[in-house]
Image (cartoon, rainbow, N blue to C red; front, side):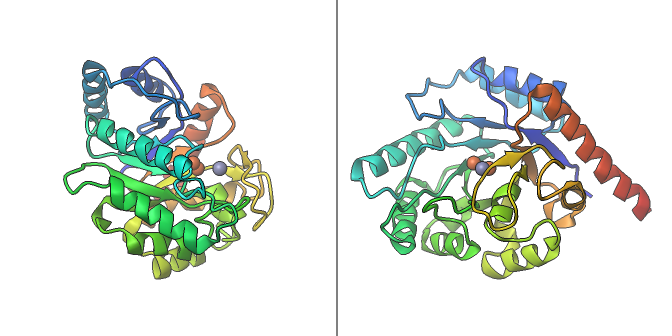
Length: 285
Ligand code: FE
Ligand code: FE
Ligand code: ZN
């Protein structure tokens, strides 16, 4: 089995090396970070020395791929052309800066169609991707599976598939499965993990699955609410997370916690998930 790459979302304004050191301190070997302030304000140029130091730390400690998260306020399928343009420019700039940290992931929320209809949303999102992706880029852009709150696009696997189908540079795009979101969207990841994975494979194809967000859900299956809970403290439950960290389909993918916890809480959750994964390896021997 490849190593388990577990981490969490980290926020820091102190730079990349500081993020890497925080990750190590809490037992993580991957992490997620915002590419800029979540409100999407102007980003500083990357400090090349700082990025190099993080890359060295990651190599030395066997980190998995990182997940950069676009500001969640962007909407690539807004009805307002200015809002779409802002999303496009922000994402294009983020992807340029990500080339200093090659070989990692850039995850974004597909967007909300706000009354235009899901088909129009899908067309606008694919159009944005076709304008920002470059053949030579070394970052894979990930569409996040969404809970379906409001008019969010990406609740159903079919919607993500339709976006991917329209992208010209298909090798540069993939999917990040958010466990809380898929459950809220109505996929029973708590009691039928294999059924959900079969559906994902049939509609999108498992090779497109690149990363995982881990959080329990405060609300029941299909609630479309998107309220994250600590691992084991929501409607998904600990046994489901044990099955997830043990599942061979997810082996080697970065799994980042998105739970309402401080660093100490995240450290406990990472340790708990590693213990659950180890317990199954021992029982398999
Ligand atoms: Fe997200
Ligand atoms: Fe997420
Ligand atoms: Zn969420």
